[in-house]
Image 1 (cartoon, rainbow, N blue to C red):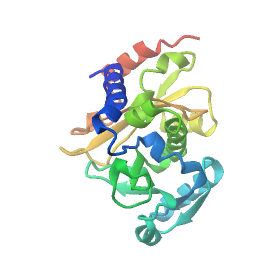
Image 2: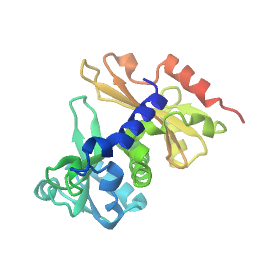
Image 3: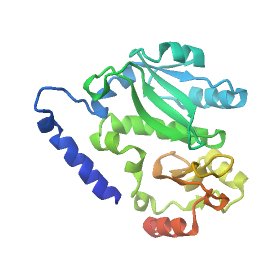
Image 4: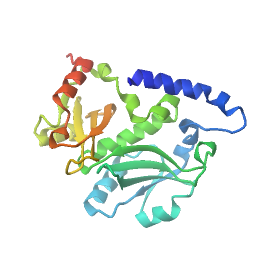
Length: 253
């Protein structure tokens, strides 16, 4: 199903929702449920992995801009995650083999009929190498989802289809280039796009790989996709995927 068709279906469902509810039960959208985000403290949950946590603390301290924040331990998170006073940025290993950085609104059960119920706002695969970009992708998404119903419903895939808007920025694929070269593009905020993947250490029948294209300077997301990672050659963008994206991009100086 195309992204445009999916947007149409979801927007139609959103418009019909009040009629389906018949005015008896309030159902809140993600936009409504996260309207209080900027006013609440986001607890950044440390993982216990020293190298990862050092990088996390450094990047959060230098770039987190969308809410008050404080760091906490996993034990503190477990004790306070049902409190609606906080949002939590935490990392979890999933069945796909990926570690996901998840922004969650604290609270108990209640679903969409309760503004203060628990909600996973956004979940993004993460590793140390691309942590700065991932943190900014999360921040950009939250800012967009607080003003756009479509962004809230579609998630990160809502950024797909916008490559032509930045066709003057060349795409550098991490799988094609020396890894230090693409890392330097990000570190130096070069005016270009970087295509990279995050995958488990080994492929398997359950494993998934996440593919990204983001701006090295602004960290804006222009493509996001998850797919199977069943053999080692699935780790990066395939030649077919690259050709399709480059056709959509239409790079031009």
